[in-house]
Amino acid sequence: MLVRSQSPDESFNTNEKASDYFETNHSNSSTQKSKSNGSGRLIALDAVRGLAVIGMFLQHFALNERNAFVAGNTTLLFVLCGGISYSIMAQRMKERGSDVSIFRSKMLARAIFVDIIGYLLIMLNTPYGIILPAYAAMFILALVLVNRSTRVIVYTAVGLLLFAPPLMILGMSYFKGAYLLQDIAGGPMSALALAPAFVAGMAIARFNLTNKRIAITLAVSGFIMLTIGKLLAIYVLPDLTSSFESWLVSIMNLDQAPPDEYAIWPHNVTPPQMWHLLLQTAPHTASTFQTLIGLGIAFFVLGLVFLIPDRIKIVLTPFAAVGRVALTMYALQFIIVWVLTILNIDYDLSVIPLNDLLVVIVTLVIGSMIARMPNGPLESMMRSFDRLFSSFGSASTPK
Image 1 (cartoon, one colour):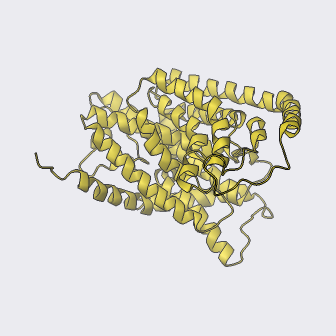
Image 2 (cartoon, rainbow, N blue to C red; image 1 turned 135 degrees about the horizontal axis):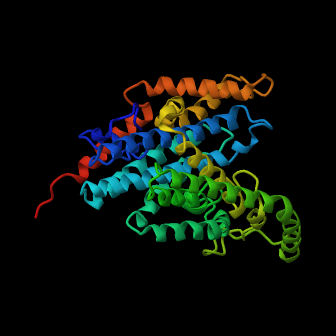
Image 3 (cartoon, helix red, strand yellow; image 1 turned 120 degrees about the vertical axis):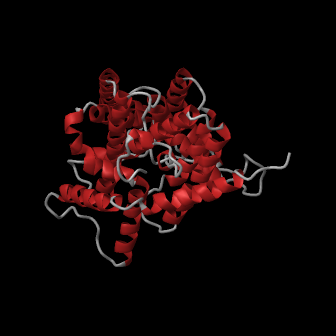
């Protein structure tokens, strides 16, 4: 992630700061106008990512009735920004004439690093789910789409929105105990469950968000998606869910003996029992409807932020600071929970007046302090790991 805003002509320099996955640069050095647009677009995208991180801190430390909408939805916003960054990085490397194998090796390096960090956070045994292993899987799986047309990417996002939920429910049973496969398609926190948001971000990156018409279209589309999702959740899904669950109970053999773990696959796994999740809208259920609502909010927020006039872009600065060190800030929240739990300190701030405002301010302050460093700690480690990994691939091979 960029620690301070680069001028566009500093993009993709020898230290490749702007090529990190958690970094983006949207510049085009051909004209001064496009340079200005690139810098503004970078700040806005970092600010949106920062809002997603702040929403996660709210969810974990100060969730209440006022901010309940952040639960689950900030994860989708975070993943959406990830897809945008991923696609932009691929496009910029292609414009520079870099071989596609360089991008692939870079993504593999980041996948390995992020996966390691994710499992280290899982080992802290906090009560919250960690999406980094799923993120790592998406880095690799998305390689099949980077050179596809925008139409193919859009169709893929729509297809995932419809078909990923039942597939990830199947994965909850068939991939139980197989951690790598679970990360790919084993439930609501798997890559498959989050893929609709990631691929949607890849599609969005194909458009110029600095164009006000595009930003307005994105915001309006998000509002429509959110409205449709909420109306379905209020007026249609309750009765449909009741009928569907009654039907499931009637056809399921609840007295079925447990599977024989020594039998051949798939006779050694439990038949899927979580089909009712398909019609849920609760946070992190990853149903089509919950994802539709979350993406609606994400589109709406993204469009609004990009509509902020350049003359007042300074208001985004503290949020962009958090977004530029998002990987470090993401990990920090779980470390804080772990430390406070070890010390037997209650980290639920619900008894404090305006607790959510306090969490927002503290998160902004911490993020801004970390962003004043040359690089965020985890961002620096990822860059070093990337260079180490790339050095193996850059060695000349005998002819």
